[in-house]
Figure 1: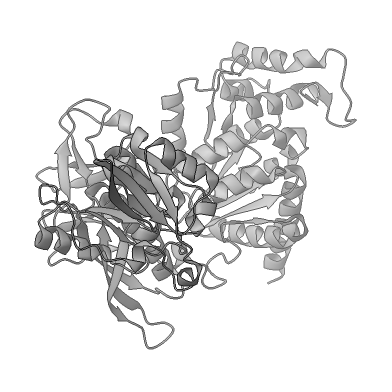
Figure 2: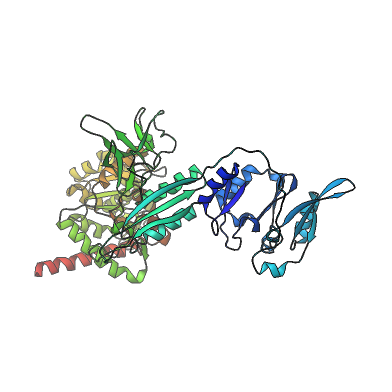
Length: 577
């Protein structure tokens, strides 16, 4: 039995149909409100043919139809026929000369549809039913079949149901809407069992929602997304997380739980344990020891044989507070909103960034800067130098290029062969970056070049002089490279992750590749500012999922200049106070 759900029928009814009628029930989700019942867009015909309108169904349902009905038996109709309810048809047989002739009775059919059905041996009879269309039905809705052939089939129902629990500022954060939309968009249905609304604005709310899905795979996908939103299973006592051993180094078990940027806890032996090294796109590994269990995010390549990995969605909960769901008070870095700031608001955003940089530095926090070579080309190096000198930068991440062009400017006054003071190309300047690389390679490293008095200024010089750690990740296009550049990608990723750990704010300056890479390995709760003249870069970073990121579309040199000016103003204000 094919059964529809989505607008007027509940998915939860399908298991009862399978039980009472002793048949296999295949659930199809309707997504177009014009086709609110299955028989308005889906019509089985004689000899295994199917007349249907694919856009009326979601992707999962269309896939199920394709798996069950051979391509040569599927008759897809166009929208013009669909809205005339051509699928709301009656298929009968008439004996002519002792031979059964299949007939399809419908309201109206296009010439194309008549041709397709005719080629397959069907005779189309059009019966004008436009007045009945006004009430939402056509030929099928006006008939009652009293004889129906029955095919033997095994009783089966793959419908899955789970109850989830939500708690927090559900309305203010928009969490309820997101949860319900997630369930429907993924192919499931829901029933709100209980909703306790907080009496005061500061009070939290709680809700229990029954989630149903037509298939275990769909349910797993839905539950994974709901856990990311902070939902908890509430079917009795919580169950320990399911653990499976790694059977091939660097390969997780099937259905492994994929980590997110949000703080996560795993239930092991009845105890909720926080996940260490939280980051997105990893597996969650559990290690048992006499002192207790340790749960940690691990990249797939780091998984070892026999190591236990969390699979499925049982025994996992994600901590989503108001900060990670929605902006709250101005004290919570209020300009952060996962948005892209326009040019006219740069001064306002810079003021707020400067305020937070000062606050983080004064309380002993950590700021990480990710920078590209554009910082040097646009004249921003002197301002970045100032930030390093005054203790606002605690780690620098970049590629081979920023260091090369910074050193080229320091040694020769050019960047990519362009005189930084006059803004014109110099004769032979295209060779300068290679000469700069060669000089550092002769010294052995950037730090040794500073010690030997060869490198006397610039961003890299300031990092060495002020003990600011840096990591340079190489790429296939790098010249040289510098001896400090890590050309082993896995080693570079690990070094980046080490320097990011414990960061309060990451300032990303005109480097799409490195900024997005850093964003992917940064947990929630770390504020991020991405500055680039290309809005596509800052938008991509904002879309990675963190609510605490902002994109500033402007020239990075101008941004750094304004930032230093604002920090100087703050210093003056503090001095006067």
